[in-house]
Image (cartoon, rainbow, N blue to C red):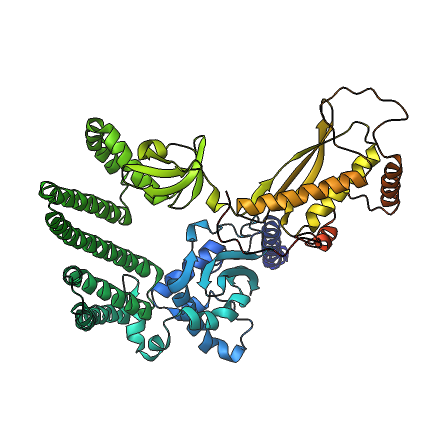
Length: 586
């Protein structure tokens, strides 16, 4: 009996122990936040994206659909729509996606410092015409596990994104084998299309060049010079290359290549464009050299003719150097070291003809940078004048004395040049000195009224337009005005400045105070030189402003500034209407 009883109790005790072990394991798992594993590796955002991309690369769209959250799609359609959406998303990411797999979190909870809500992760972006669209991953429960999948909001946008950046109608009409078969991450139909584009671009370049030459030669025959014929003949080859590149570029756009392929072929097109430009430059140098030689012979300057081929070869060398540097730069080579080597060779030339080279490069700098142009009124050093000519060696400026000053370009380029012709407005910044007998409320009255006048004047820009009490001078209370007048002609500025100054005088007089002047004065109570009646009026007006909370110091409210703008009459009442200024003022 005892043995049978122990035998019967054994299984019961084992079952109890197994149940307890399971419970303890579950409790430990819950305490550690562990979840059952996922067969697709979707426990982390990085694992989800890596698994999806791997499935798409292998063409296993049924498996790739498992990485999409299809909750918003009816259950009856998920089996058919899931693989199709997975394929379309793969095309979208391949065509216009910016995905950084290494930047994605490998933690089950995802990144917590990306500004997104918990359970959301940004896997990348897709560039569209309306701007970048985020590709989001969302953590949700699937069965007994928490997994990361492409968020339902992103899944809902896949058809629209595919329609915009996908293969287009051609990709949908082609057999799936041509679309899904990929070589170097480029679809097979795109490789075939590239071959066709190359052939068509070559044919288009020849046909278009022939048509363009036929039309241009008819125009060239009407001219009496031979320069245009030479220029046209020189540009045939570069024109054919340029048209071929343009046709190839249009064809590549139609193929909707992936991003890396677009980058590669875009680099090839840049290289071709640089070669075409360099080719044109070399041909033009030859033509210009022939033209220069012919003109020197016609003018009888035979001694200068041998210099033309030397100059042409030097110009060609410069063009070739720049073309080579541009090509190297576009293929990713750092040209800094190459430029340093070229600088060593140029050092000898610079030492041999330092001043000539300095003036030559100074003239080139002035022509390229254009701090001043012919006709500009400018200040150079401590003199001012109007630029009349910018040559390779020197610049000529006509001063206010109507004399012409010739400055070597090397010196002129190092001067501080102030170009008055390019200013968009003129600075008005006088300092007013009021008498020390001015009371604080009188001073407030002057500050507010002048600020109102500046805001209301149609020729004064409201931002900034300010007047500030800046200090106690030796014999005056100093007020500083800082404003810009909306004119560029200096003569017109003087007229506006005169009007502003006259209005300031009226405001100061209306406030009952006056301008200070250097002097020593003995004051008597009966003869202060001030107007007590106007003083009381100004002080009472300031008190009224203070009571109404309209004492706009130190700043005017924006609505008051807007209401005051351009409310004054300019020219002032009684002045004749303004006339158009035919010549700029000085």
